[in-house]
Figure (cartoon, rainbow, N blue to C red):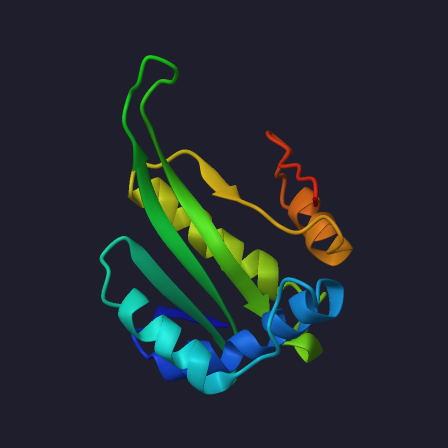
Length: 153
């Protein structure tokens, strides 16, 4: 397995199809069907922002997954202490490679990057109905810290 940082939005837009299809299947009222051109247009400017990092996972020449992470700094306020975190916007492993250790391999790279960046907190969120993601994050040692609720009117 090989992990590199990529600045190629075409690769990420293509690999995004796997995670987008999961979201559309679970929550069609919120997520749009996968559209390569629209997603490519979205990722192009994101890759130019220094706080974002796109990590590509390859195995034997195959591009099998990616992670989109962001370095965030939160200033001190009257309510909270200042802190930095590494926020995982998306992590995706192609369907045929799931449950084979690739996601954990990606996260090990993310953990190492956080340590090298002197960041001791990794944050992410996922949709409650995505039980595969929930189980994976629990296995990785993530704990629920906040819950987001809503009410449709």
